[in-house]
Image (cartoon, rainbow, N blue to C red; front, side):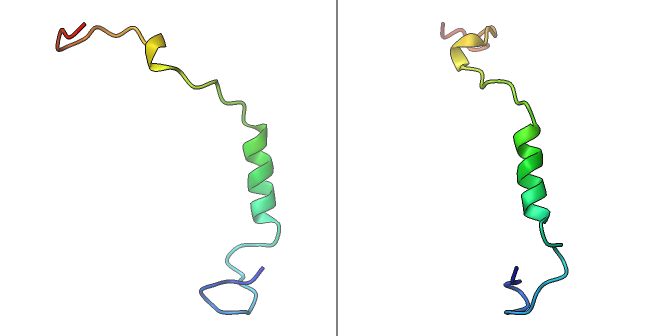
Length: 49
């Protein structure tokens, strides 16, 4: 992987395969589904309801 900051030379700041491991870790994280605004039942502080 070429490092943009240092030109065409290989950059030692990010080890080879690092981003592949990051992508694999993100796939393993089980995130809950997004919450719709209508599902939130907070009182309206301005009384616009």
